[in-house]
Image (cartoon, rainbow, N blue to C red; front, side, top):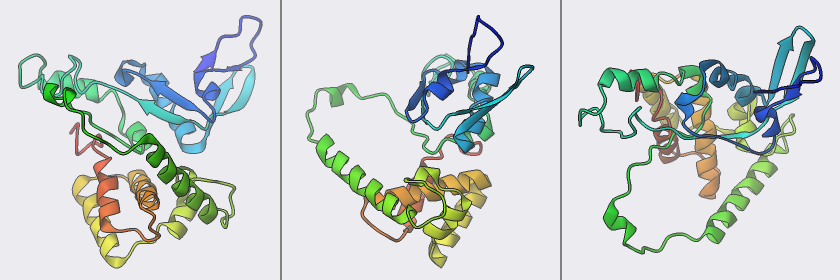
Length: 233
């Protein structure tokens, strides 16, 4: 996280700060040291990294998009335990290298199954990159317009705090009951609750809708697949 400085005790920005306003990609996430992973919690929450050393305390900007990849087991496959390649206990130890507080700060958890060989031979048409880009640009424009009326200078849903969430992620009684039930049954944290609302708000923006629906919340909850009571406990 900190760059080495052979010319003196001065602290220099490392990978996290160098990724400011960019993307930080961490492959094989559980293979990183525990201290390095836990050090991601503050920048993911606050967009900055504060370091205290004998030479003093310094704060670096660290607002980045974290993209991380990992295998579902130490031997590589999701069903390796069933195949006898990996014990359930070994899989649990491997997954538990990623702490709950760190997972809480990751908005989208996406499980990617192995691609069927037959699908590789098919040529199905999909939405073009240009069409996807247009939808994203429209969604970001609507977010910027909505958030411009707030007190803080933020431009997208990812940077919303509790105050903005309460103002811009209003739920109907039915949606509120739906989300409360999901939180209770899945054992999700208060921080995951806020992440779900921000993701649901973004899903609605991409669909061009102002109001949040149960389907938006359900899709956002589906992106919490790595949380402790869904995968790991």
